[in-house]
Length: 133
Length: 133
DNA sequence: ATATTATTGCAAATCAGTTGCAATAAGTCA
DNA sequence: TGACTTATTGCAACTGATTTGCAATAATAT
Image 1 (spheres, rainbow over the protein chains, first blue to last red):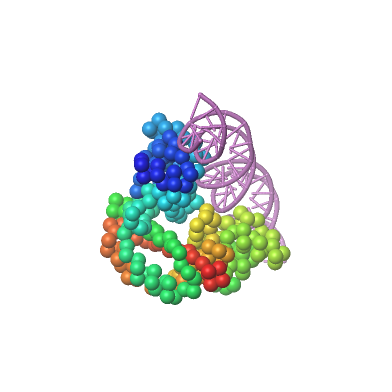
Image 2 (cartoon, rainbow over the protein chains, first blue to last red):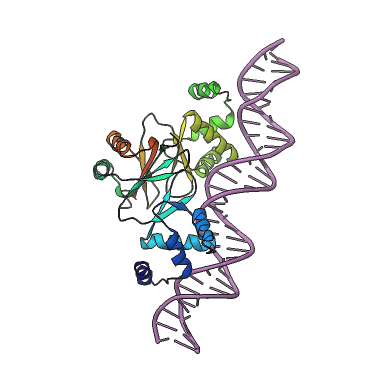
């Protein structure tokens, strides 16, 4: 609580009930706003989806959450990890797993070959999990 | 013409004027449906956006085009390349450049570390082009 | 406690993409 | 060539995800 409290305060933002609730529901699994909303409902915490969107946006700006995208037009949010990582999405059942990867080499290569100053990248994998395979 | 014609025919599809027109407008630069539509308008070829969507879908299925996504909810289409490649998007001006990359190692690592059977991946870079930098 | 102002929730809008269906036009075959 | 079959088109209307405007509400500072 305190850490999120502090980060919010540092940016002139307030720690509200909806924000606390949404924070508790976040996990290291990327989740859509719909999924987050459903989790909240199960906990008898009814929060408008607009508030969820705005709160997640705020969390992303403060570095508390990450926003990802897979193959559709839906954004997914997860707790910001200490560790930079990527995901594999099962195209059978939708299951998502983390992939840790040392990309230093890769980035070095890219930086060497591109005239762009590279700031960030998106990398996601798709396939079949053990069950679906 | 003949190659697209042949591919279409092989799948029981027809080569129509809209399809020819859309094909001529595709390039190796990823373009949104809106951009494609505007290019067509400039050439006095008015084609409904629904037709553009369906045609691009068809092209993607036949391996004539690729569908990509960057940071928003919009899909981008480009001519299917002989060469598998990725992109860098300039966050200043939107310019997109290709990045060629030997990912064999990377994929090998991932395959070794993940229990998933990996079928495909998305990899895009973001940064600033020379002008915007 | 009060004032200030960030935040919430509702309704309505927007944006990208999809679906249903009747009208049209490729390709086929006599 | 001309009739026929059926893929394809275009319109209208719809969906799903996200955003915006605004008045009501609730955190924080004084």
